[in-house]
Image (spheres, rainbow, N blue to C red):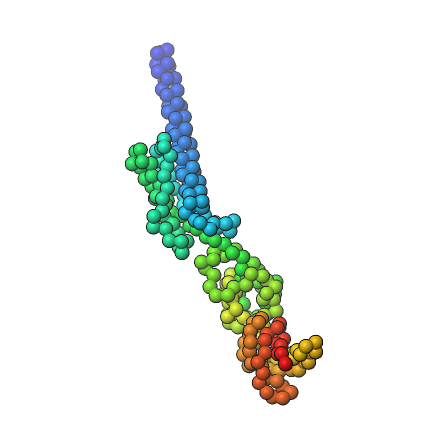
Amino acid sequence: MRYMIHISLSTKLSIVFTLFLVSLCAAAQSDNHGAIQSQTEEFVRYTLLSNADENTEITVRSIDSRIQIPFCPEGYQFESPNYDSRSSNASVKITCPSNQWFLFSHVLIQTMQQVVVSTQALSPGSLLSSRNIALADIDRNKIRGSSFLSVKEVQGARIKRRVREGSILNASMLCFVCKGDRVTISAVSGGLSIQVYGVAEQDGTLGDTIQVRNLSSDKMVVATVAGTDQVEIKI
């Protein structure tokens, strides 16, 4: 009877020890996966990219936990011979020459920039203010046209067409002076300024040159958009 008990205890100890080894191996394997991902990010940031800055976000896709990563005594080697700097994606080949092991890791590269976006859906004619626009970090590859870097740049402008929530605002979407608006024309000459009223014949954002009809003379003048419902001409 004592012999049977001894065998039973030995078996239990063996099982516990085996489970302990499995646990250690799993932990080591997890560490290997994490180390490979960190080294891949470092390779992309410091070797693959020549102009990475604090705005560059590098995301290494998680390696499948079922993939066995062997110990590499001489250190893993990294390369990406087909990388295109215009692309947001990179494929990095990781190798261990001593045992002919290799793995491909996929990396997302994003250079972020803060630009003005809509915080809600906007209808044509909507007035832009801090209540419906904000700055957001956007991947530069997704920015098209002349975007805005400050909320103050577009406050007071109006939307010309329907805009979805989260849309990046650009000059073609809005106008500080819209066609048909009644505007104040400031005629500047030296230190003198004369103001008359007119009607905009074209849409315009800050700095744009548009045609305006002078209501006093009924003549067309070319003026520069200076603000909301404000244009200037030099005489």
